[in-house]
Length: 637
Image (cartoon, rainbow, N blue to C red; front, side, top):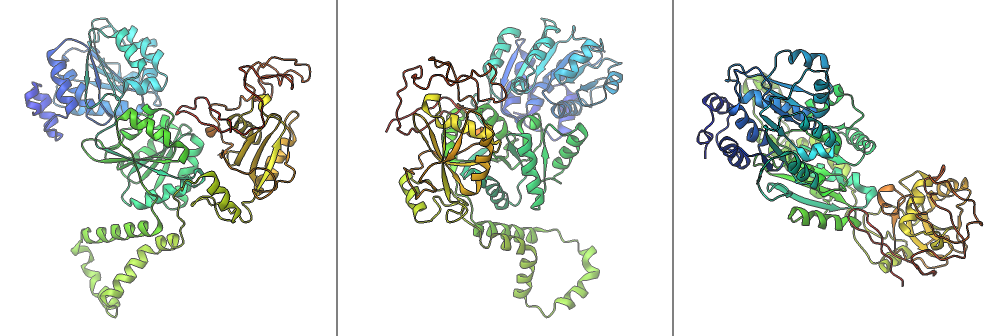
């Protein structure tokens, strides 16, 4: 099928042919005839980058009366970048339509400029929800006569908290309008909006509902958390022509990763919420023209970005929500091009990969973290390929050739190649000549303990030095099962009291009265000092146990960090409910937890049993959890 078979106006066809459009993409092939021939509303589900702007833009332009100076169509988008992109695309499609005006309105720009553009009513307004409501309240925009309403990236708008704004706008539009809702996924909130505000709508799905793009390959690497950045560098170095986005959880992590990449010589920059609009525009412009090879971003900052030809999307951390993973991976593999979504995970996160596989109906491939030899080989032959395919400007270099030939005449071809490769390649050779194996090897608790006893690293890729600095010390905390402590809640306490996510906790043993745990010797003073100021919590060195070799059981059955990201489910609320019993033995804590967020209930009588019938014992327990940090399960041994 061609666009000419879709019954579009000649002035639209001539414009899109000038833009190079020949055959409609699947979402366009399905939605354009429906909009032109039917009268029902439309819910279209298709991945980001599949041609959705033309899918709604072309039929809307075809049905609008360009001689009528009135707002006839409204397109809502979640972000400034997407708003501008849609408006520019619509202007390109309509450039041969006399009298057609399209005005984008969005936050981050002087509102006076946009007010002037609205002095003459355009036929189409493309808007972000917040700025549009502002203009409606100023009496500058009237939606009472619109014929078409488009919600683009509707799931993103809901994720960004625009639900109330969308409903406010919808209530200002006439019931006679036709509504088109475009979304990559179909969460429950989207379905509710469709049922409430749309009339006998048709649902068109391109691909599989809530599934990822067919053009994206999904791979993952298993790494220790503290080596995540080194793994990222290996991935980037293994792909010399990479052009992608690295997704991080927080603004701080985004800044740190981008700064480390730039310090190490990579063309990278950060995109996060602390940037001004001018800074954001500058970063995005450099990224679009490929002055920046790697954009390190949070999910919120990257929403609505429309950048073509991305080769990779890298999940520095897996998102908590499968829908967010879908949006991340959907930023590559666009317009029938191939893309790769890479995830760097810890061994304990394999169940998350399984959950995403099930939701997306995709198979993820686990790959080994490349070693230094593999990286150097890939970089070398990439450089050779560039040399073979470089465009030689004979006219420009001709004056210099005689002198160059004379200066190099004593060098043989082999020697010349060696020097050329060394000149361009020594940095990689020097960096990777003694590089370690970063692949994480899972071992049983017995294997790990035996390796530690021999003075070896418990896992390949664990950079801790177990011979000296890495010696562990066993500590004891004066709370246990009767205070509701379990390993996850314990990690929440460590995170809260120390305020340091880099604290590395070894085995955890929870008994009736106490919690025993191991820390690296070089972090001992930091942990003890942090707890010295606590009035109810006490930490001391367990007698007869200075390392894995000394006193007591040392089976490292539960290992984790004190970071918040790994103590979910217990978090900082280790005192999680009324336990009953005599409370006279301890002063009551305030309802809000006072100045310690983990104090949100009394300790209760030390002789009372916890509610729910949990038995008291000195047996150790192990934990498990679900994808979204759901509760823990414990097994008596």
